[in-house]
Image 1 (cartoon, rainbow, N blue to C red):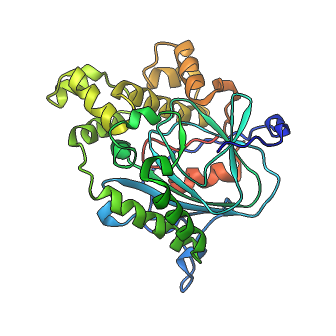
Image 2 (image 1 turned 90 degrees about the vertical axis):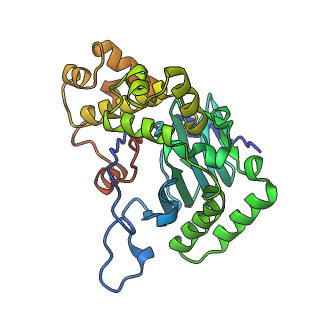
Image 3 (image 1 turned 120 degrees about the horizontal axis):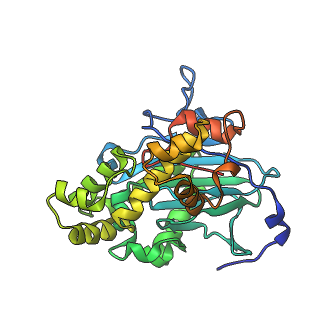
Length: 323
């Protein structure tokens, strides 16, 4: 149920953080010293990263735990990333700032595909397990109507029933270590994901879009994959929750954000990413981030979270971006 908190939160200035994902390395993020426990391998941002089990790799892209003590912090804007995510909270509540309202995020929630940024803020100590699915696996968690969850954060009880959601919440809360919490979420997902057949056409389409950073037309994709554009659109939307055109727009915007973050001139970024002109670039960046390119961070304006994500490679597709 939504709760409304102190509206002064909305007056905080947002940090600007952009992170470009690469393929994660095995194990926890960061290398622990010899003999150290895996759960000790973390960084200044409080993130632990665990490599998903091999049998779940076709569905599960990443598995994180974030733990941080209560401290004053501004909200964070999270840009769409092309994934459906399962989030289990065992710390103090998190809130989303939506249209002037402050909405408490359910303790166990499913985050559908996003076409616009969300603004999140901690209200105290942070304790989160975040499991991100590959783009083509969204329907494995949310079902064949995955597109109905676009731009929504819903209580997992709406998807799997109250008993299943409550059991997962209790198991994560009672676990002793970050790794144990992550493994509890992984085991829960394993029972769902392994029963779900992956749509190979959606996989092939999403991978091509990723490799070309969104610079490909739907007609080209359909021809390459031996499909009609209409059939491809229907299959991808059913599996991913977004159509191939929207997914390509997102991948291209992420590529543009990477170029802007490196300090490349706007005209160069627009040309390399296949935008018609700078105005086209500005419209697309603002659509996905809520900000114009001049409001994004350039070199030398990184926060610890930004540096961590840029070096840690937290997200395989297409990238993780915080503002």
